[in-house]
Image 1 (cartoon, rainbow, N blue to C red):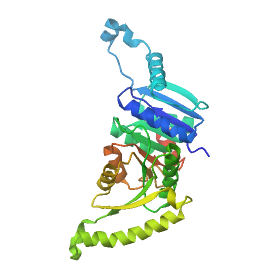
Image 2 (cartoon, helix red, strand yellow):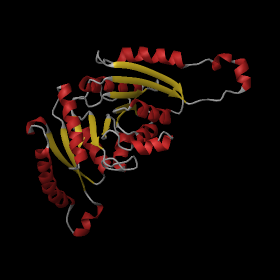
Image 3 (cartoon, rainbow, N blue to C red):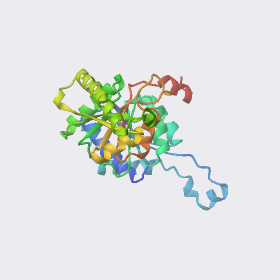
Image 4 (cartoon, one colour):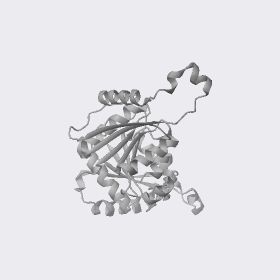
Length: 299
């Protein structure tokens, strides 16, 4: 079954684009999408009359030149399935709003975007009614060892399906299902040491992880599990990623609308902002669509 039938890939003509295309190639190899559209949006700029007279070429449309540049770059830096329709879209428009509008028009399943401007990437992740993959510049070019952030919810279960499929497609190492057990700041008020607090949490978290892994529709030997303890969820997950050669983070999104937080709330946004590896935020398709349509006046 195709996970992501329609994929939208905004490009910015920056160094992040090469990493975005590498991740697009990897996800497309697994998902075998029907269509991938690469897009580039430039904000409209008002050119002073005096400058128009002295530099009339500034009034010439840049669409065709940008489209050809994008086609050449995609051809050089990606390997896409032969049966996938490839499209290119260039326009003068607000990058975030027009990308979201195009997501609705295409009925996208996935947006893959660079993290060169984290604020824009995170805004897309918040509002897009589909899954979003944020790719930092210089990120790993393949997914050999993905990690799935697990909180034992149905959202985590869906993320595990994606993580397992990614790992299977790359024929890399087994994916790691990670539960971050938070060490609450007030543990010392109970007159126990940090080590004792972790030991108590470990047994409970291990039991929950075992129950969760048994509920998955996947062989037990197709993944590994881990529990990591830290005072701060984002730093704990990123520490684990850096210490264990993880090359992709997969996280499930909770909530029925675009105002709901994803998996770990603001924590996952911190992870997206600081991660050196791609972060795939998995959403049920259509999540927040009515909200976005109202926001863009398309309802």
